Structures are given as structure tokens and as C-alpha cells.
Image 1 (cartoon, rainbow, N blue to C red):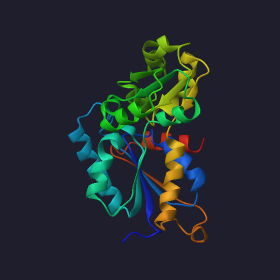
Image 2 (cartoon, rainbow, N blue to C red):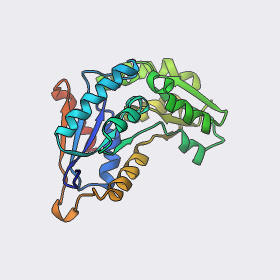
Image 3 (cartoon, one colour):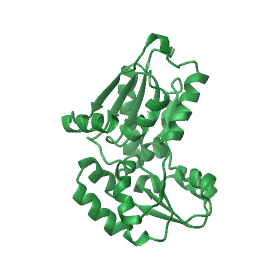
Length: 254
């Protein structure tokens, strides 16, 4: 049986999910967290569905051993492909899954031309296509950003700028909204703005944070704040990369 003293587990194919964790900490600062960065298998977007299912399954097993009471899938590709499988297999633990924030465009800027930036795995997933068909404003471009998460993970500014100029430069002046359909992409918002101009960004991190809090309350898993003045954050990288760990905490503290 789950108890409220357990940790909140969060995983991504790399450190991109730190953008989700930052939003979560804003509203749940007292909780204890463990973040799993799977740089060994990064990127997920180019892998088969079966490969992603196996990878996610192994990560969940690890997080459960670490006494996690709830797990956040902070990767759009993993969420789109694996969440139903994980919920069915581990039906005694809640899963919170991020998804591309296309509905936010529908809610707040429906009539504006929009660019969705996402991985191949996300764009080809059944979950994304259902979301897109439901909220399509008929003014939307979909950009399959092959390799972008990988070079963001590398923190190679030169490669990032060259990639964006080559792949999204043609959308300058054509779009006003940009849906960041991968948790890595908010890390390069400034670089995207340099190419596209003053666009509006949409990502699912804030929505995930709010949903996580709702589920914790509903299932009586919210940590008693009187017992813990400040939560802890543990970081694990599947390649045991010290560089990733340093960058993770540097972003987190910004």
C-alpha cells in the first residue's frame, strides 16, 4: 500500500524533464523527489514502440525500488507510447503523463497560426493524433524535430542554432504560437525566438504539476508539510554522467 512518505518519481530520456520538475516544485516544494535521466537510451523519439515500452518498464521498476508513491512521465514520447501499458501493469501506483499542449492553443489562442515542434515518436503516436484531430484549428504546422532533443542534451549551442535556422527558419512570420512538444525544447526558447521572432510558447509542464497535486490530494498521498520543511531532490543518470547532474541542478536553480 502506498503512503504519503514516499517519493515522487520523475523520468525522461535525459535532463529535459527538469522543465517539468521546476513547475512541480513551485506548487509542491515540500515533497521529496527522485529524477531519472535516461541518457543511456536517449533519444526516445527514434526508437520503436516495443523498445520504449521495455525501457520505461525498467525505469519504473527502479523508481518503485526507490519507494516512489507516484510517477511522472516527463517525456512526451514515453507518455504517448507507454503510459497505458504502465498503468495496466502497475495498477497500484498513479502515473501522471505529460502531453503536447495543443489543447492550450485551442483554449487560449485558437485562431492563431501554430507550429507544433515534437519528436518523431510523439507525432506518430495514436495519442497525439487523437489530440490533434480533436483540437485542430486548421492553421497548424507540424514539425518533426529529428535529433533536436539530442543536441539540446549535448548543450551544443552552435549546433542548436544551426538546426533551428535550417529547420524552422521558414516559419518566421507564418506562426504566432509554438507548441513545445518535448520537455527538452523549453530549454531553448530564447534560441527559438531568435529564429521565429516574438512567438507565444505552450508546453504541458504547468498542467502536469497541477494535475499531480490534484491526484496526490485525491489519493491522500500529499506529504504532511509539518513533517518536512524542505523536500529533497535526488538525481540519477543511467550513464552516471557527472556533467548531466551538474547541468540538471544548474537549470533547477535558475
